[in-house]
Image 1 (tube, helix red, strand yellow):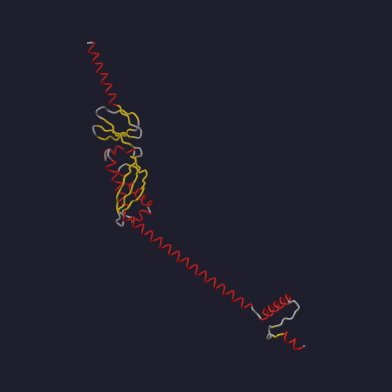
Image 2 (tube, rainbow, N blue to C red; image 1 turned 90 degrees about the horizontal axis):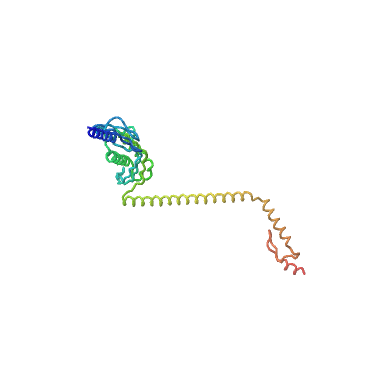
Length: 269
């Protein structure tokens, strides 16, 4: 009898230990627990730490709520039907207060079923609004529109978009060559335009300078008067007297015809 009691007590203890083991669960840091009762999702959301549950009736599925990163290469078409490939990096997280709805409506494979298609759809929808050249020159604007559209899609499925980064847009080799040729043509045209403007400016400067010189000459002619001419003649005579050595020149001139003074003196003798 005593042995039977010991066996029963031992069995009860084992059952209690088993029940205790299976009645507890721990939710890891950065996760939330979705409580399932006989397969049905309960409204209760388990936070980080230890929790009790009904053994064999309830179980817990853990859903990560930390920021997750999804990086992929996406292909789309521009407004002018150029094929473009973009490397897109997306940071997102699951809404901690709606993990039970996410699990119930979508399931644990929400990344493959929602996130990846949403990224591809958002990028294709936005790139179709821009030409290939605009995708290059307006990349921040394109990124902002993709982010806005993607955020709305993820919010609908209980996820939060943290950030998005479109690292680059890549086009076909033929398109890249066409862009290079166009840029070269634009640079040559710009250089020609600048040369033309420089020539026009130089020509205008020459015209202005010639006009200034003509005006200066006209003013000088207006300043020449008979009095000024007489004054200049006096100045010339004064300078000649300063240089005279006291001998009469053999020939003199000026207002009168040149006369040979040496010949005249000989006749007097």
